Image (cartoon, rainbow, N blue to C red; front, side, top):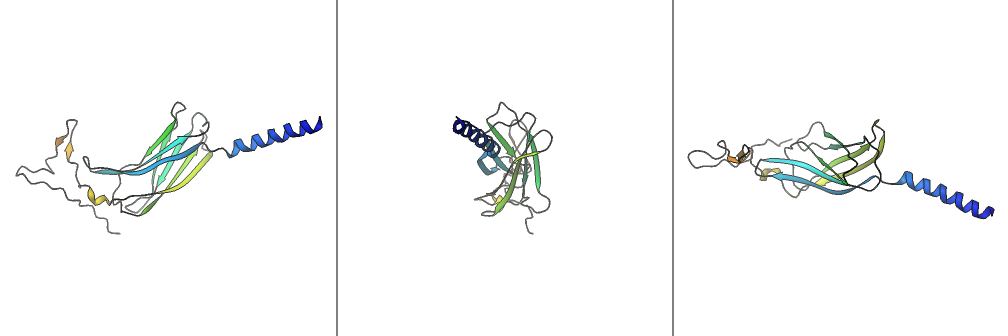
Length: 165
């Protein structure tokens, strides 16, 4: 009888231990998004929920700034109905091919307590020089941008970003 009680107590303690080690999210995707039409680049990270995340929690991502300077940070509310969390940075400049850019993702509860942290990196297989400096289209109807497509029939598709560090 005591042996059975011991086994039950041990199983309960082991179960509690596993709960605290449980990961709430796992990395399911990480890429650079180059949108040629509007001449933008951004980081895009997706997370898959693997555990129960408390109501009111947020996901915070800190991305290395490819242009140098301060890191780029975003915060997104986590909704219980969603199975995935999507984190997209603001627009980037000077993304270089084959350079690993650091990313830190933190899951915080409503009071700001750290629940989980993921440190990773994202590497592009393209330079941002593939993008023009100005959007190719403007407005809701995607009208050709007159700053790119000139009245004389020429087009200015060059990238004028100064990425020298």
